[in-house]
Image 1 (tube, rainbow, N blue to C red):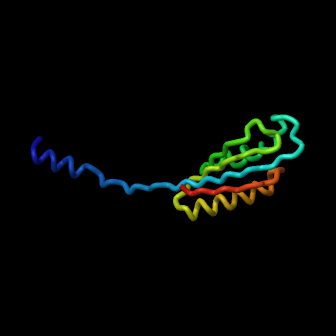
Image 2: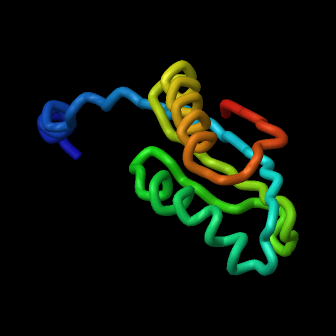
Image 3: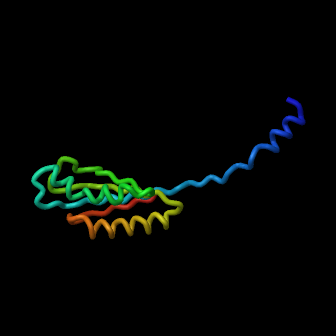
Length: 114
């Protein structure tokens, strides 16, 4: 390859884009349920959890434990954001909204920022 071609290729290469590494936060909630006679009733309690927060572009919602238990449930919400502070604020807001919308007592809350 000629020196002129190398210079031309070097000029046409755009500068490297800055790397943005998003942060991830996990909010795990352990719920106590009452009066759930079957798994269908249990799913109905958490319909709003998936319907409301599962459609948010920066959140992912999943039942992560106690799948077959009728008296308890464990759900995890993963949040993606630009900074740990942003994620902490978002998870605070989500936890507060969940407490007001879900008809189940929250026994334990675990948070982790990755």
